[in-house]
Image 1: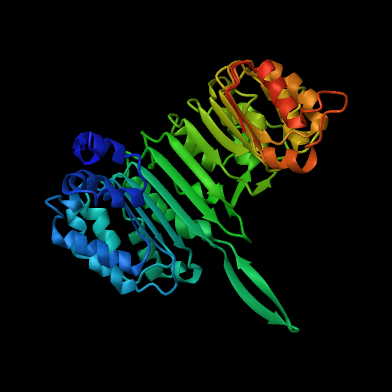
Image 2: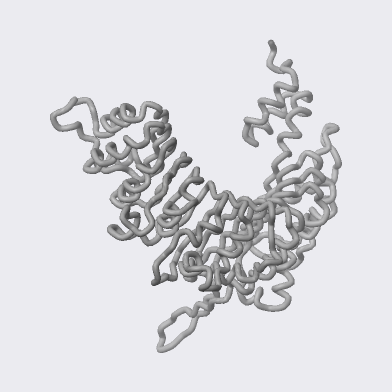
Length: 462
């Protein structure tokens, strides 16, 4: 069969696997292929330069290309302008054509600046009926957003309604004011970001009662923010009955008292919000700092707010508590982040509340770079699992091989093992042959051989 005589249905199917560059080249083969490829080529559009804005606005204004209505093909659109020399006025070229994007379902707004004129984003909020997923990223201009006009701008940026998935990201939310004294310069960092952001964000959530996924990523190199303060205005009037995924990333400060103290010791801002959303299945909590709680910690006080939890990514101190609660039996994925792990203190078997059976856990990831710490965590968790299929850990030094292999006796169904920097570690540190063993076998090969014997279902080691 001559290649150009391929049925357009097959060309369209193949096109779904091609890169944007390959799609553009394929569309030049012949008119029939071009007609098949154009809807795929324009289904996802990224605007990264002034010239891209002009080109895309020209395409939209033309109505169609080779009888293909391009505007109705666009399902995903990202405006990603991070050049400090970007011409703000060029965005206005898109304004007349936004209403033609009737099939747009995903919109990503990633700008290095906050435009003076937000007419364009308002049009996306009101003129795109199929829009369901939105990602917004912008720098936090502290002095600006503290003003009345700045609060209006922020409310406009977050003026979306009836969306299903929402992500908000901002960097450098702390105000850095340089002061000079005795010829020594320093910085004053003013807190208060949470209060300025909380109300506009609350308004967006109230306007999206069908929200299913919420991701917040607020980052600053010098300042952490209180998650409880951010969530405090999200009172009982704010309920999202479809919310299943909540990811809170960045420079988060957690207060252990509000998570684990008895119900009578209020306030419990985050815990109360979670309790009103018992359908949450996927929870991610970042942690850059912790406000400690000196009283006895009861994991059940927090776990009662998470009756449907299946996927958890959180700091080690939170995970250590939740695997001792009713949450444990429902978890399918557990990602343990490095935060405040203390050997001989955390992940011990003889605490007041013992670890519960992790009967559904299929994937475990431990993010620490210290294998000794990871080993202590695995000693507690792996014996409690029954169907673990995937394990992600740091590289296993040779002196730990015996202990590690012994633990894997608890994971006969393991299918995938990922060890960070695995090849690099062995190339640099342990590429020599085994003493007294097969002269052709390296430590790496020997470990892999033993792993496959212990775990016959193992398909991938990387």
